[in-house]
Image (cartoon, rainbow, N blue to C red; front, side):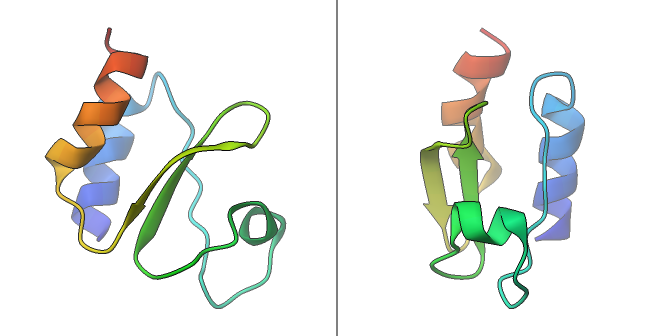
Length: 73
């Protein structure tokens, strides 16, 4: 998953903040996102509300469909 995460970081670095949450480790982010599976990605707003979730193997295009209008539009 690192290449996908690295690509998202690079493409959207001026628009979103990325946090990695370990599925097996308790943390404040883990409590907010409450991961349901692994791999999993969640898009949160500034109030830490989940706007969108991706589960399992996710292609970069699936992220682009949601993030491009928010960040590049």
